[in-house]
Length: 174
Ligand code: ZN
Image 1: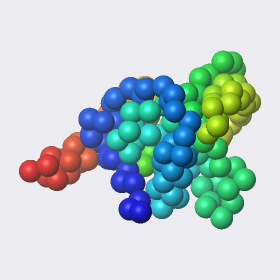
Image 2: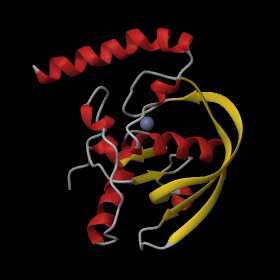
Image 3: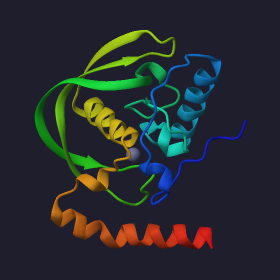
């Protein structure tokens, strides 16, 4: 099976809001599996369904980004933050925004509720890097990209990089 293609900014599908997952079936497991493969192929540590053009509240992640170490692999369906504490800036990048890195302010500690692949309700406490990845990927489910959350100075700095991606997108379409 062909690996899923990760969509690059400013692809409009990246701005679509995800729909709740309601069918916890083999198709869903297959999709989550293909998303994990696409994430590892691009050396990422998280991937949300809108990034592969699917408007579902589904995200996959593995903080160590290592396909041979799947202990940290998580598939989150319909995730929501239920508790949050502490703010911190740290650097982020995104598979849909190649070549751009910048500091983003996030919660340091969060508690999330989500459903697993069998549809069972789960709760997870996350801190630091894991909490940051979850918040970054949750944003994708709302059509939000990390560059939307930068300081005014960083927005100015990355503007030429975004424009370069916009030109590339236009060239591919023409
Ligand atoms: Zn991203």
